[in-house]
Image (cartoon, rainbow, N blue to C red; front, side, top):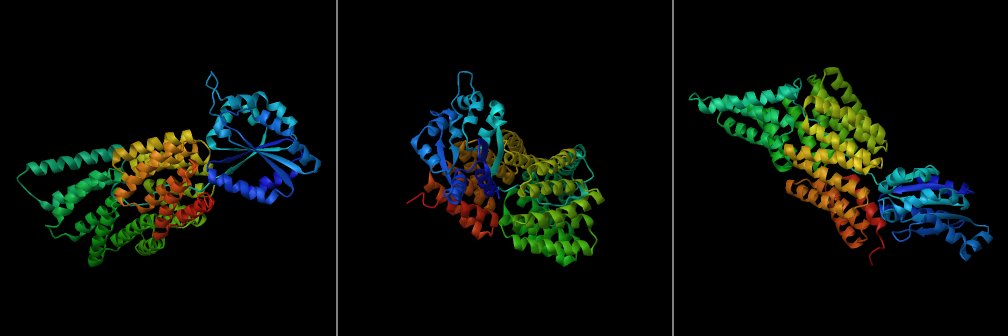
Length: 535
């Protein structure tokens, strides 16, 4: 549709018309240009202008062409003419003694002379350079007719919904007081001569759950493993099942999906043995989250639907909301954001009705992600900011990090990579503080995307490599595929197609194996764009 709009502008413009084509992906820009050229070259002659750090005066370049014999011959043929300007991203790097861009200074100074050019001028530019124009050449920018924006859709971080009923009414201070309470009980137990293994297991379990709720997964694993070890010496299946199911969540958060499946399987077996339908639904939901992370989306949907059926049967409204939210996540992963929104809105309604603030924050954040997928970043930001406010109010550190990361991605989509970096750095700090390895990898990957938008592919590669290392360490196949794909994109920016193709093929292999449609589409598009660049 945007290509159609550009072609319409070229066909209808009979005088000077300045438009920007904002695109951060060089190979995508090339593909768009080729498509436009193929469709208009029979009736419109396109003059390509290449700028660089040594060629910063755009008007001078345009004027030179209008005085050339080839230009005059095209005028004599009565053929329409258009100018496509490339390389302004490089030209803006040359600074004058005051630290300002020489190219942008010249654009502003000579803006009125552009009226002498009686043809459409399309300036191809990335987000960082467009921001510089807004800062340093506002007068020239005001002359533009429009901006055409092109992006390859990027993965938005979504938050899986887990349930922690016992602590939802507590604020951050209350949760921290609860941590101190259980820690003191454990210390007293160790110092006491009276030993009650059930109490010791129960206190470790509760302390582990509070830590998990707060987002400190590494500490949670320590306490829950202690509880599991003690519970094996006592005959209490209810406690064992609860410990195992929450260990499944904990290892999911830590990125150890093999252990997550193992503990969840043990918990499901116990729930079936004792006929605990609510716990059964809880564990089925957790299985769905795990298999979704592994890339088996359709299998995840089966688990979510089983969990939703149980939640409705036993009239568990909180569980129903979580199940609907997770179904939304799954359909988002399948590339169906509108269907996802339907599920999120149902889930949000339930959370508000029952006063589930944590669930409300999760669903608001996921609605933001869905609208971002639909190309509505400003609407997405509204939802993310509501979610962030709730996360801070209830002391949900993991949720806070996810909301900050999503805000960063949204601002990248708006062409504000520096603002995006600020949010991603805040999110990364939280991920490191709470030991969230998967979150850390996602934040590093998002920083890579932001630096790519700034036109710094080498710095982007540094972040992608750190993120890739974490994904491999924790067995996060989806993250591994995403980071490999982004490395391929970065190397294509650097003009290294062989390396780019190598990474993209690795990424595509993972995407195919884990049935990850968005990644498959991304890699296939990139590889197609790189066809012919390597003999």
